[in-house]
Amino acid sequence: CAVIVNYFKHVQRGRRALSILRLTLKLKWNGPLDS
Image 1 (cartoon, rainbow, N blue to C red):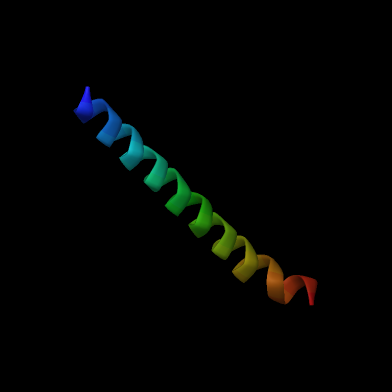
Image 2: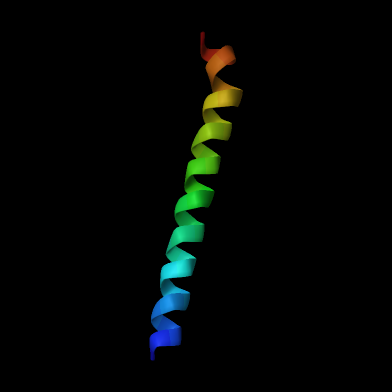
């Protein structure tokens, strides 16, 4: 059971990292174009 909880936490951390990477990429790509 503990293994499943640790895996779930790891997946959540990965998703959060991916979302942050996507936001930074969007800002990098859209920033210069918008301004």
